[in-house]
Image 1 (cartoon, rainbow, N blue to C red):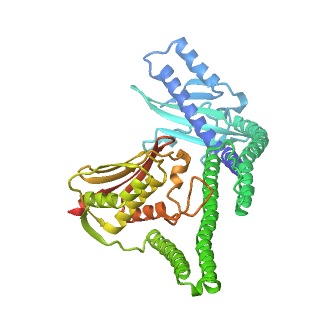
Image 2: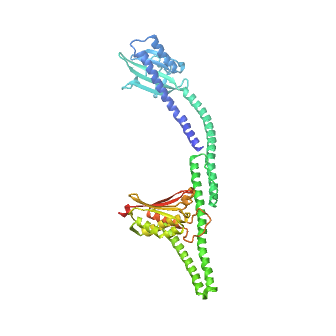
Image 3: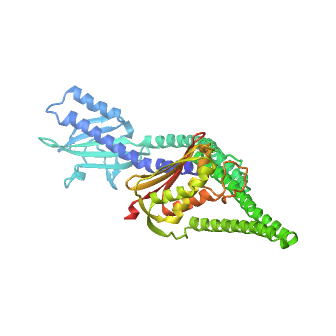
Length: 468
């Protein structure tokens, strides 16, 4: 509304202040055109016909003016009056603060053209009819003699035009303000309504209500905002779910060995303290559970260091192909235990520069996961491929596969496709999270390709340029 009022104020100012000089300037231009037409019809031709005179007369009449032409002797050679008593030529008048007699019989304005001046124009007042008039004069240099052409026309139409404009402006102002009000209400509701709804939903989001859905309305900007908030809500929901799982799983992982340690300690205290065989058996369980706790705390600590960027790699040059063969040999017992067939393909040599221990941990974790998710009597394919600039290690199984919607979350701590958590007797549940942290610290490329019912392939790549 303020914008509309500002535009209307500018238009009103232009109409009331600028229209008068603009109209007068255009009136003078019109009189110059009339003078051009009269000069062409009356003076410029070797002889003047009735048709030429009629043309000059018609021009004067059409433009509501009166015109008169003098020769150098002061004789009137042409005169046409379409104004009657309003014509300034038939009465005394004041021009440039000098009083003049009637121009009907004498060229008393000839002195205005002394000094090379060929054209004059002035706005004067006709006291007889109380009207503003425009007096235009031109000196015409012809072949035989000079002529003086004067044209007089009233500007009374200016006041009438201003009145029309003012009346129209009042109607225009009312119409524009009403239209602006309707449009502003319409668009403000369409714009603000989704923003208000988004704000209400954000309040619910602050209360950890992740079931809300943001609607962005019909505008691109609010749609994009709603889409971004919906995406953020989904991620927050997933993070909250993972946080709860993490707390529950870590609590379970810590509570279970603590319960075992307490139970066996009490058994030693109450039952097997004096029985060496039983005591040693119970102490062995306590040591085993304590080692698991130590291993869990160590892995959590290392994972936190790597994810925070404060972990220092112990870089060295080693043969990645040899490292893969070494770990496969260590896992041979697990393959035989589960009746799995391992197919290994490696190049003769693949030198890289990395932390050998940590990369070995990555390879072992990939193979361990493949064994864990493979049915008995199936195959596991382990390859080390040299691509010139990079070396890729991949471990593929024939297990159940990973749903596409779950793939991006498998690298999170304790994330499990099967939500029924059960502590592994062999690991801490942090394997892939640690793998991700190790490979991120190395700046390596890694990923997983999986199809339901056809297994999964975990891989990573190290550049060979570092070896140089």
